[in-house]
Amino acid sequence: MVSQSTTSSVPVAGVAERDRPGAGEQVLDAVARSWRPVVLLLACLVLWWVITAAELVEAYLVPSPAKTLQVMSDKAGYIWHHTWITTYETLLGFVIAAIVGVLAAVLMVYSSSIERTLYPVLLFAQVIPKVAIAPLLVVWLGFGLAPKVVVAVLIAFFPVVISMVTGLKAVDPEMIQLSATMGAGPLQTFSKIRFPASLPHLFSGLKVAVTLAVTGAVVGEFVGANEGLGYVIQQANGNLDTPMLFAGLLVMSLIGVVLFVLVEFAEKLLLPWHASRRGAAVTTTY
Amino acid sequence: MVERSEGTGKEAGRGGSVRLEDVAVRFRTKKKDVTALRDVSLDVAEGEFVAIVGPSGCGKSTLLKLVAGLLKPSSGSVRLREEPVTGPRNDIGYVFQRAALLEWRSARRNILLQAEMRRMPADRSRRRTADLIAMTGLAGFEDAYPHELSGGMQQRVALCRALLHEPPVLLMDEPFGALDALTREQLNIELNRIWRETRTTVLLVTHSIAEAAYLANRIVVMTDRPGTIAEVIDVDLPDERDYATTMARPEFARATGRIRDLLGAASAAD
Image (cartoon, rainbow over all chains, first blue to last red; front, side):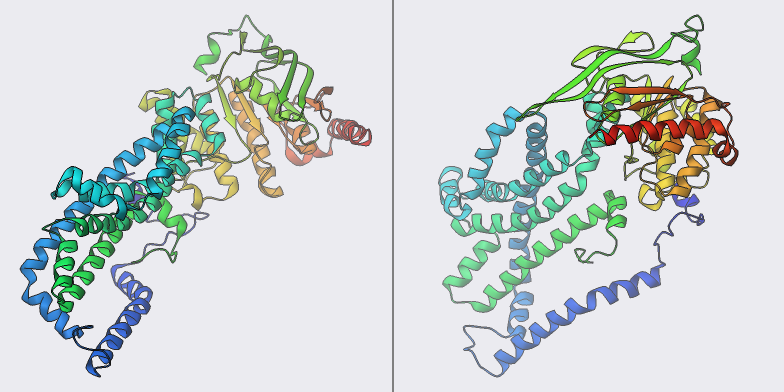
């Protein structure tokens, strides 16, 4: 793999030219690709500003952008602390969901009796509204970190399992037969063929899971917490402190976006072959 | 050719490299039992090139899978290099119609998959890979990924992968079926050369009558469901075959003519 970067710089006749633009081109490319959403976001901001500046809505219902930013900078320490708590719960829940989800998927693919046993239970766990069981979790696990992480795991687990099962089952059956003619054991077939082949599917599941994990953590905080952005929003709500409410919402969405982009970045790093096949698809955010 | 000098050995001589005796394969579906193969007996000598032709769905691929041990016969016996086939065999090379390459591996590393699975010594597999890349005209494409390669190039990689461990028997299931006519011709010429150089026993399933006659020593013509062997045709051509000259020879015309008669008769009987 190391030698590849040196040899592939010389284009070979017959090999499709690889798309590796220079740094300047990359910046231009990024701008060309991202100006539309940026313009749309700015338009929303302007609309927000117009509504508040023209006093179309009472100031205590919708604070102005300036007011919201003011709160964010005034109480930066306070917001930062709670943001970190929520991020930590989200990440912990996401990582546990990813590990447990992948393991469950592997078990289910390799044993049909486990699959038949687990699948209905999983589906059942998925259809229970997490908001409804969050209070129960707080009763059981207290006000600390645990119930938030559990809700995040419960909510993020399902897409991971489903995508991983799909990925592991989508492997070309001829590839598996070929592996048998190579004298490969089940472990080798798994590590060299099945697992890597399932990664593109897994990553689409992980992208969904990471955004859901944020929701899970915040739902957990809503029900009973003295820390985290969910708590911040609850407090602000109680005090009719809409600027703080808006600030909390903004930061919360930012966590989701940043984590999503990080997972996507990891995907590009780990599966360059997949990203290059997919090309400049619309599903990439950066 | 280390493996070939031992095991079956010289004393086995023209003894069977592949031997099928009264083989039948029946699949049980929900509605009915389907007989895919019936009364199939075939002897393939060591170093021989045998092509199998027949209408679609006549069980040609099933036959190869039996030899590889990927499928068990319902009755009859299958022997590979004097040993009964009981499960997947690893003393073969297998090439499918689709190249079945791993997209995350470069051409070279796709070929080396064979070595990794078999835990071959690294220096030997690396040398062998380099030889095969040169032999199949893949030089310059070693570091390309499958999606960067044309169909012909992908199939060359699959062929290298199948030949890496110097298998005594090479099984090919319509390996050039998805390629354009020109690429197919090129690969036919290359396969003939590779076969002469390696002296591997080859079983080739194909839809192309010309391909079968150009490459094989013997051609097995099969009938439609249930698949049986209609006739085995000897091709009286030297092993070294120039493409254009071979096509123009009377032996070639005789072989292809006979196949057409048989396959025509098979479809007319429907």
